[in-house]
Length: 82
Image 1 (cartoon, rainbow, N blue to C red):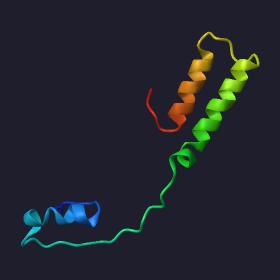
Image 2 (spheres, helix red, strand yellow):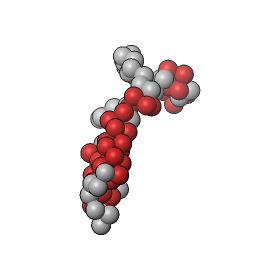
Image 3 (cartoon, one colour):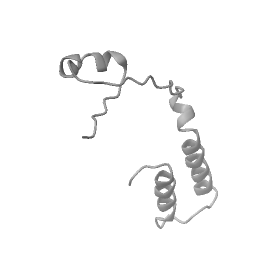
């Protein structure tokens, strides 16, 4: 029988004590994930958007949708779905 994985901060796991009472459990303390500020996390995406904006102002891709296609592709590369 495969076990159930319960993951989250200790206080959230502790709230489920009633359903875990009497069961065999294993607790693994995970390393803290480094906190990233939103502007740091989006830095690459912001720079790409600024480059696209600059290229549009300086005679970049024609407004036939290709600039929009580039924006969609930049977001897709970051893991977003259009």
